[in-house]
Length: 416
Image (cartoon, rainbow, N blue to C red; front, side, top):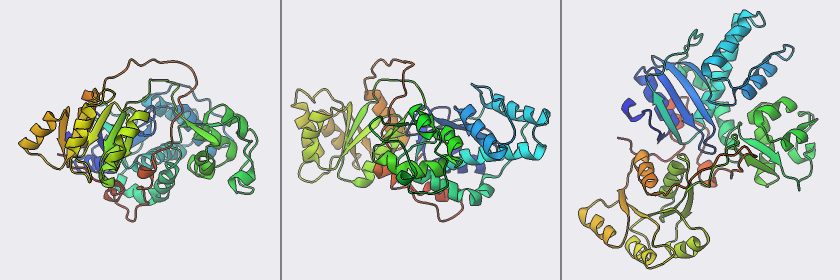
């Protein structure tokens, strides 16, 4: 991967690889990383000459800052404004110093911990959509200039905890709701003793609070508390909701028919990071019956499969009144002219050869999806499904303290 591969246009990459590129090329600018589990959540990393100046969330700054300041300075009152952007948040922390509430060393600690937590969240992602803006103006009055490599030893446990949490809760910013049919949370539910104050916790779950807000009630970090309640999320007692109150139309459904589990995982991780739902089918004989229940917007299909090949299956789709209008992309290791012609003759819409670049697959799928008109409401947040098991189980704690080690938890795609 090179710096020119990371542009203002969204690309899906391994975040650790992208960060390594910025460091090696001593780049300056703003990198934005979007959460695959909830595209209303994103992280913003500010670089100068390859060093990290600041990292923070792109939204929810008030909840996150309120939690952090309360944990660090429980006896000091802070009035935190809402709707902060990056520079506003930076200025607010500087103004705490000017007001004499905190010392210069304490303010530097606030900046460091905010940055450290954001980096841990980013490096726990196996793949994510990112943008990079080299023209972004640097933050004023920067007090940090960190070598990211030097931070890794202190981040290993945080990255592992964040990765484990993603098996059920995609981000500490996602909202959690205790279902009405469920009983109130109690200590036996969580199998812990004398480490959490439960006063008001159930009421806050009813309000659809984030882990940052819930952590204020429990005296635990968001990652620790999130992993404690993860069994209740997995059991369906607690619903995971989007951070945003935006209620868009359902995400486009993409079907991938391929007997290779590796290909299935790569396609799922790439497309889910770009806002699609993905259904994987490893047995082509089950495709027709599956699509009766779930009609996809686009079908990705391998050519070489047992029992029935992709050409024959595509021909069958085109003979079905229900399926013939669905675009089909042939996804295969073959890249010859005759193969492309044969794919067209049986009715496929396009063709992509393995190994493919993530942005190439995303762009092709987007070009074939008919986008419905979306509507924005101010109602309750949108329910989200837990991250796919096939992706979550691929996340393993790093065994070395290098940026490259955080690039090995997901299957690799070739980037030109």
